[in-house]
Length: 253
Figure (tube, rainbow, N blue to C red):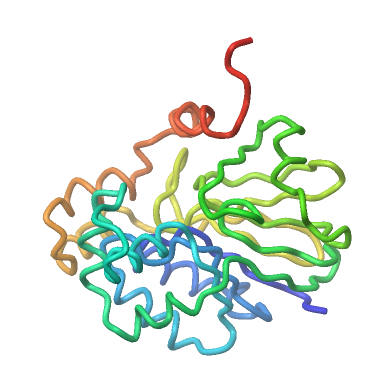
């Protein structure tokens, strides 16, 4: 049984945000750091992967849809990636990075003190692109939980970059938010699990981080990218409006 687990999701290749979270004492003291996907698709993909791999077995990895897309692009299994930075990020990865992404599971389960058996995934337990939101109907949660073992009492997911905690059919659902591409408010968002749930925000200077990323990254549109995402120009309302049509709710009523 693990006492403390730090959950980092949707880092999206933003090294200054990742470094800020890793410097948190509670992250340093956690039994494990669980990465719930979308680790690499961003302006500093190789630096982020190299830093995380240097931490060894304390880090437990899960693949996200963006990680899968980068891998498929490099392996010739797709010609395009929906995210404009994706093709560039994919080309930066070394073979050892591609081997790492190939090895990542879609989910994992861990026993966490106070939370029971916790299933960690990227979007939903059954799919790395499905959308569920804090206000998704209970019928939607029942659908995406179909097939889960009955002893899974807590589900941790990412993908939508907005932190929340809610109950759905007796299961606690946690989204830690995004480390590198936050929606709604600035800072690197993550979660600390055990024995309860603590949604955290690590603040860092977005201007200093943007200047560093501009210097380090060769992505052609890096200035605009860093300004938009590090300053959280997309509000939570913007994100919920964009995601809501994809969570299966009936908009005809």
